Image (cartoon, rainbow, N blue to C red):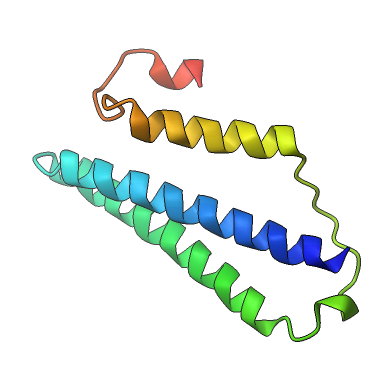
Amino acid sequence: MSMNIVKTINWIRSIELLASNVYREASERFIADQELSSFLSRLSQDESWHAFLLGQALESIQEPESLPKFGIKIDSNTKDEIEEAIQKLTASGDIFKPRRGFVQRI
């Protein structure tokens, strides 16, 4: 059971790193809009910081078997949906093109 904690933290950390990369790429694409680019860069840094903290948490787990029961469950459907959404964003090629009403559809 406790290995689920380690697997879950590793998975969340990988999603944080993916999000950081998406924001970093967006920041680079919108470099001409300094305010937007700076905002996206800060979001990228935030996501990187989250990944770092999760890495620190993993390092602090000396004996996973002694940890209390983990209260977060991420089923395979949820995991697949999140990963698929990020893959679609990064693979579409037009992720950074402004689209009216896009946020409402997500």
